[in-house]
Length: 213
Image (cartoon, rainbow, N blue to C red; front, side, top):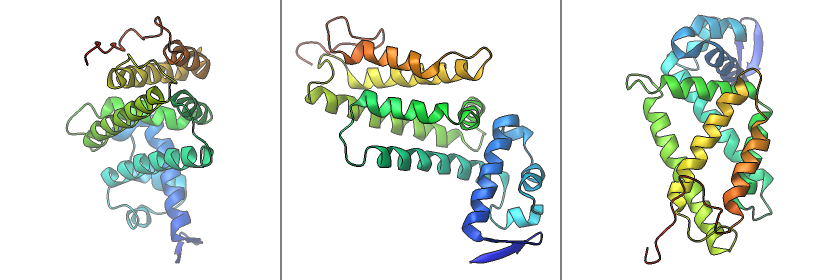
């Protein structure tokens, strides 16, 4: 269905994508509390009532932005490895290289994740569930690579997954600063230290399983 807003006729889906892109940029620059619906509407070139026609409030808008960007990640990884069997390192590096091409999105997640530590923040539960979900998916991929002989079987997948997420978040933060670090080069070097499978490959927080675990 097409609609007319501020004299410009756009399909509904295209308008929503336009709003999400503008909102992502605004939230990345000024955070949730520093961004107004009026600012997002101005960026899109629509009236505030026109924006509210798609998203009833700012809380719904920030959640829609975060969910859409997670969906984009999933679609990208699915398409990239549609006909392959990537190692966990290849899968993680594909995500890192994708993020390196979109600093505004990395900034959005870095800023919003920090803000969401406040239980009253609309994205508080979103990030709690997101970290739990990604940690589970990553641990499953590490365990799968262990079964295939790609990763040291003595490592605890859940502990390694937790550490990988911490390293990724920390590198992204440093990458956003000036001067930036080479995020993906540092991340690859870190991943290769424990994915090689040698006795010295365990990361500092990647607790090895006991012989009877």
